[in-house]
Amino acid sequence: MWRLLAPGLKLKRYLALVALGFMGLGAALLTILASVKFRPWWEVLMASSSLALVIWGSRRIGQSITEVLGSDRWAGLLYSRRHLSRGPRIVALGGGTGLPAVLRGLKHFTSNLTAIVTVADDGGSSGRLRGDLGMLPPGDMRNCMVALADTEPLMEQLFQYRFSSGELAGHSFGNLFLAAMEQVVGDFVTALRESSRVLAVRGTVLPATLDQVVLRARLSDGRIVQGESSIGHAPLPIVEVWMDPSDATPLAETVEAIMGSDMIVLGPGSLYTSVLPNLLVTPIAQAIRRSPALKVYVANVMTQPGETDHFSVEDHVKALGRHVGEGLIDIVLVNNQLVPVDSLLRYQKEGAEPVISPTNERIEMAQVVSEPLLSIDTVIRHDPDKLARALLRILVKMRPKWAEGRLGDALWLENRLRGKNSLYPDGVTPDRSRQN
Figure 1: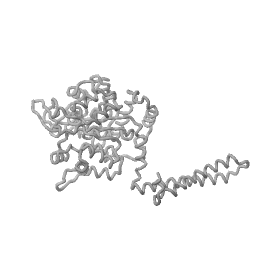
Figure 2: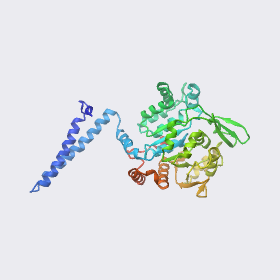
Figure 3: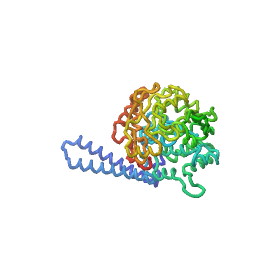
């Protein structure tokens, strides 16, 4: 604390002015209470001058801190560290573009987030780094860290920047950064942790396993396809997928996060190449089944050509059950917002169609909840804001026991859910182009 009073920080003078202002306000109040003969002009002048000192001094303190830190985001960081730590403990599993959408919305309600990310990716920049350096594929991890980041837009753009020419063509800077960080600190988990500090990540990003795994699939004609990138473009319907090796070991932190969570979110995302690879790490599926948390599966909005052609919501849930057993899901969250005709026609040309919603209130022992969840821009996907609110409303309504012993936190969350601008308490307007 004594360092705050060191010369040159430009804090002492403004702290003194703020203190003087409060003293003046107190003196004005005492004068009003003690004066037999009331002189309003003197008290008003004294109170106004004192209030001006408090306001001006406080602003100058904020400006001094911003000058030292080089950023005006310190207030938002303080907010996320204090207020958002009161939010529920949520674990989200997946990969691709679906998991970041979940994280991008939830981070404005809670910092108690754990993203468990598939490590089966073998395409693009991640696949090349995996082959050249023997590291885990960093692409999905990078996307999740950026989604959870509370940092400058320039830093986010830097991590997502992809080289377009030369020997680095196709690589993103964020992937190369993680690769370099792993070489410096010695292991991938520490590299994720240190990179998360750079991005001021709200939450934790963990790989499903540290083992080098390969995803395999059997098609309807008996043919076996190897690799996530190949399975996602399978020429025939997929019958089953499995992981090699089948006894991959998850991180202890991953299992602990699942067992200590209030809610577990599966999806949205590619069924066979994003959601299931996490669950095929057997101890993770077992931990989810044993966890007292509320388990929610977020159904996809559109089918994926070559992976889930003509699949309904029920087909997705049944496929999960075939691979990891029944009883893993409590709630199925389904979109009920209509897709615009022009967007629908564009997707149909690519072989995709809306995922058919169930007509019943239950699917395979799970309750169905329908909400408008779409974000329609150049692509059709889940809106992070709507999705976060829908998930948290489900938690508050379906599992009130999560707040036992945390009544103040529960009331805080409900008030946030009712607020118009509750998703952006720091005054930050979301950049839709970067989100999509």
